[in-house]
Length: 213
Image (tube, rainbow, N blue to C red; front, side, top):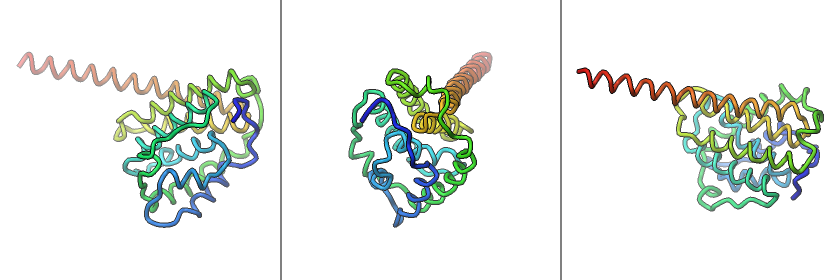
């Protein structure tokens, strides 16, 4: 593996469609999904793992499994090493009946942005140093994705889009998508900070009411 990622001739849309067609049965594991993706690269793996969070479809347990997998894969990207994934994550069953239509809808979503993906702003994708920095941002995105806020609107969607844009930008050498990934990560941090502030304010208000009562 190299830190200077080569341009990827495989489109994310095609990979999503092929993976959805290849999944057979009522359950599938992350190990099987990664085997279906094949040798198209760690960035493409991360991009595929974000798809269940881009759409309003709930698949129990996916946030923890896929989020941790994204973190470990991103560590591999950042350190220029093949990532290690624990067996508990790789072999945990996922509901295929919900995952397959999610992948198909994700392919439709990606199709809408394919026309604007092309190499540009090489300063954000063209060196080992910047790709290691981008890998650190991917790790941060995976951490944000794992936050236990599944019932809060956009709490999974914002970091998922940030990770997706970073992966597309790095693999296709499109610096504008990398910028979009930075913006999505920053927006997620601001959003979570606002939620934390509101929770603190609400907590103080409740405590004040109890104290005055």
